[in-house]
Amino acid sequence: MPLRLIALTAYAVIALGASSIARAGQAQAFTNAHILPVTGAAIEKGTLVVRDGKIVAVGAAGQVSIPGGATTVDLAGKTVMPGIVDSHSHIGSPAGGDSSAPIQPDVRVLDAVDVRSTSIRRAQAGGVTTANVMPGSGHLLSGQTIYLKLRRGNTIEDLEIALPDGRIAGGLKMANGTNSIRTTGSGPFPGTRAKSAALVREQFIKAVEYRDKVRKAGDDASKMPARDLAMEALVEVLDGKRTVHFHTHRHDDIITVIRLSQEFGFKPVLQHVSEGWKVADEIAKSGLPASLTVVDSPGGKLETLDVAFRTAAVLDKAGVLVGFNTDDPITDSRIFLRSAGLAVRAGLSRDKALYAMTMAGARMLGLESRVGSLEAGKDADFLVLSGDPLSVYTHVEQTWVEGKKVFDRSVPEDRLFATGGYGAGRGQTLHLDDEADDDVRE
Image (tube, rainbow, N blue to C red):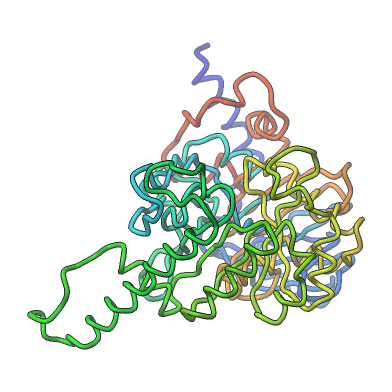
């Protein structure tokens, strides 16, 4: 039998066992689970009710009404928690700015993400449901990021998140330190930290002037400046419509980011902050959040020499909003939950560690009203775990995005992306029509 027919047959068997869960308007009730809402106390033998991609109710057994006709799934012995929000990832092999200039805010990774990349499948296997996909850090400003829901889809439009005003959700990637300095004399790129900051200032001054001209022109098209895509992106930053995600490691570089943000009035997310423990009080005073990459192996750049597992605990104690990220492929998305465990071992509380994996990232992306916790009205993004999320022995068994299962460890193809092996590096090739695909993967 041809390979494609074998795959389709296997999927058909799975579909029959699924009894068409998640039909439009049909409720799903996940019962008897140990539920970790993140924004509230853990619930023993809890029930999670989902309908049309949204959470309808969550609570203890007997306190939640299960709608008539709902499909019930018994999750006794399992743990349910919100889908992980990764505030810094490079899944989908995005490429941002090129070598022509150190500052390129007009570049969009929207135009460069491969939605069939196996890295997205691996992220689903690791429980990531929302991700900030960014260009690299080899530029002072390498382009616009995009916030993705890791749904199933054929195009980037199937994964993008639309904001209420119609814009596509995303931020702006900036960097300082070794990566963006590159090497002295490397064309248009800065050779020092001071020059790096100077070039950034020049661009924001231009953006302020561009914004002022647009505002002064009003409805008079004859007075409008020539359209400038780079300036438009920076004006969105100045107006608070686009968050800067600032790659920064060394303590002095972190302070430079704070200084620039205060000078021009934008609010960045501090990404990495390897030496954040050295300037914890200064970060707290600035009110800026920090997204940490927890690296558990030696090596890397000299500016990360003093990276410490205790950074999350130190920053949290100082009053900083702390989150975690994979910087995938720096940390494989499949083992992202380990970051929380390592932080707890170094002094962060258990509750704060789980918050850092979920709600903290949601707040950093401005998506806290939709994702990050299990609450009525939010998107039905959740994980089914085999045990405690901080245990190295626990597996992500299922990943659900907006009420649809996008990963199931019991399905051979999905398990392949979770564990590796022959074929795990091959991009997605099997795509059914939408209706059939819903049956297959639910």
